[in-house]
Length: 71
Image (cartoon, rainbow, N blue to C red):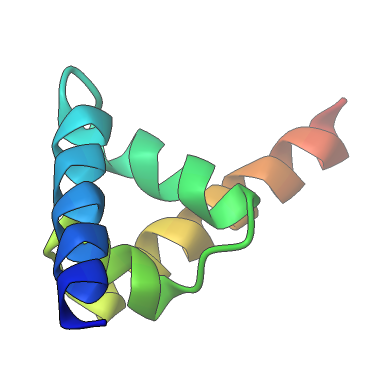
């Protein structure tokens, strides 16, 4: 059982590297948020703070709402 947990952690680490490659962190955060990841989980995976993730998601939502009102 411990080997499975370690293997899963390694897979998550490798996927995180792939996600971060050639992508802006804000873009990655928006995409992860759009598929249901929580700010806390996004922060853990991207090795950043949950507050930073929450602020990015909030700004994204605010900008999206502003775009809808102007169109």
